[in-house]
Structures are given as C-alpha cells and as structure tokens.
Image 1: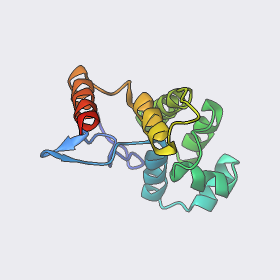
Image 2: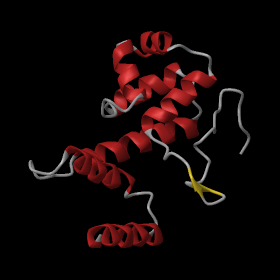
Image 3: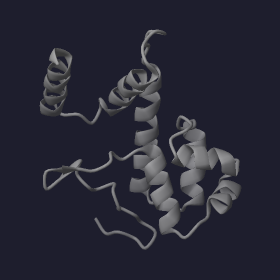
Image 4: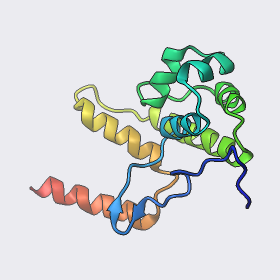
Length: 145
C-alpha cells in the first residue's frame, strides 16, 4: 500500500518485539502524538482545529485521560488529515483502551496492580495465545517468590 506524504507509520507498523527487545506498546495517546508531531503541529494548533481543549489533548497524549468518544477521535483525525489507515488505528486503539476501563477491581487492590489489570484488558485484543500463556506463567513465577 502506498504511503502518502501525510501518512505516518512510525510505531504503528512495528512489531511488539524487535530483535528480542521489548518496545513500548502502541497506545492511542502515543499514536496521536506521533501523528501530530509528524505533521509539525503543536498541541495548541491541533486542539484548536479539532475543537478540544489543549489541556485535554495533552492529557490524552500522555495517557492521563481515557480516550475520548469516537466523534472526538474523528475530529482529531480530520484535523490531522490522517489517512484512512491512521484513522482506523486511532479508533481501534481508543476502543481497546476504553474496553480496559471497565475492568472491575477491588477497592483494597493497590492502584498499580489495578492499572496493570486495566492495561492488560486493553491489550487483550492484541495478545496471541502464546503471549497470554507467557504472561500467565510469569505471574505464577512472581506468586511463588
């Protein structure tokens, strides 16, 4: 598929492993920031064009706020002049992240463990059975220490 001048596939097409080394998983906020930076846009400019607050955009990019509704994702992708593939990825990543938000955790569970469970729930669509099994075995190893 040809890549247009506005297309960015910085980390979108990278596998989750490169030569055995782990790289940071792609998130809605990370892709949003990469697309914005690749187009030479400031947060303030993108926020204005998409009609969202600049502080909201910053929080989205830095994963301090859950992904917005699809209508806002579409507004952001239009302001970025995102390709169809980039728009699809933004929507998919936002949907996956929102899916992880609904995970119910105990009030007594430490915050860092609750966050881990939410992140795993958000990744659930992208984990292979082998990766899932590896995580299960690692968790069992930790529990036995």
